[in-house]
Length: 231
Image 1 (cartoon, rainbow, N blue to C red):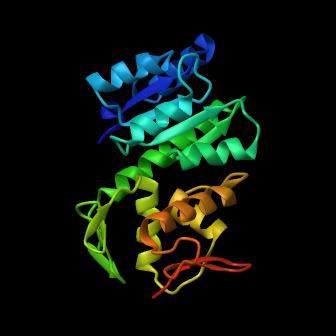
Image 2: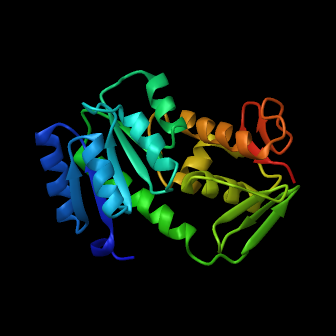
Image 3: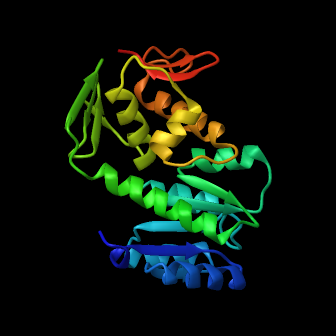
């Protein structure tokens, strides 16, 4: 997919910011639509699901987290969250609701553009043919071509980023990776608070592939170093 074929939906109730985002992303070559409310955004998504969503969490009608949850129930489209909330807990909740990344207002437009490019690049790479099309470990099977994961014969729904994290660790079973290395190899960039982002995605993966997420036997924490997938 070319940049011109990539559609981005901006959901933000601040007219000035909505206009600035539309202008900057359009200059990059993306096809941009904008919405000021959750209802307007969902109406636009009903007509055509975008390839990427920039979502403000402080919407006037429905909380952005609720909209994110609603989108996630039907699509794995990448979501970059924007928030004026400074609490780390709020940011973690945003990621847990299905966001792929977050930025705190005010932010650098240059950094936002870089993150959009990085997330889209990662999403595109997930759809490419890999040297190993199928990876199996324990009772879990990853089908890279079909972008499908089954556990104990049951298909499990993963976001694009969860799929990429699991696939990377599965391809390198038994190897311990620090959070910083995972950010570099999977997220393709690093930023303050990134370690917590890794922790959140690991926790969600455990909820989906571990029999007892509180006592994982597959996706392990190596204290003081990082994470590994048990060989």
